[in-house]
Length: 85
Image 1 (cartoon, rainbow, N blue to C red):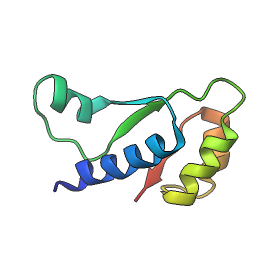
Image 2 (cartoon, helix red, strand yellow; image 1 turned 180 degrees about the vertical axis):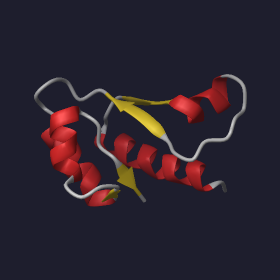
Image 3 (tube, rainbow, N blue to C red; image 1 turned 45 degrees about the vertical axis):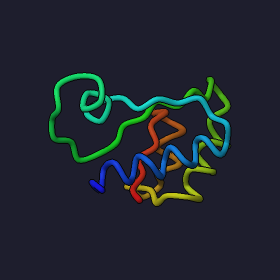
Image 4 (cartoon, rainbow, N blue to C red; image 1 turned 120 degrees about the horizontal axis):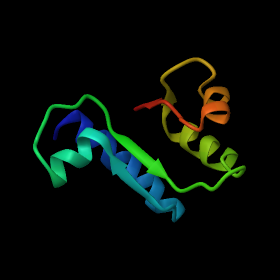
């Protein structure tokens, strides 16, 4: 299985196990719903609400590594959590 698809499947499993509402966006979604193209990551939107991001950040960081130092701090400021599997 393609590495990006595998990473997306792992991310999906975590989100579904938590009962979270989410969808894949970007190049991965385009492969499914539009023109196939190469992508090196899986982008996802997670419906966390405003001001309630912390539990989502912590749970995701329990399952995946941050792509940058202080990924949680970055996520709190910018509402983008950069992860790697």
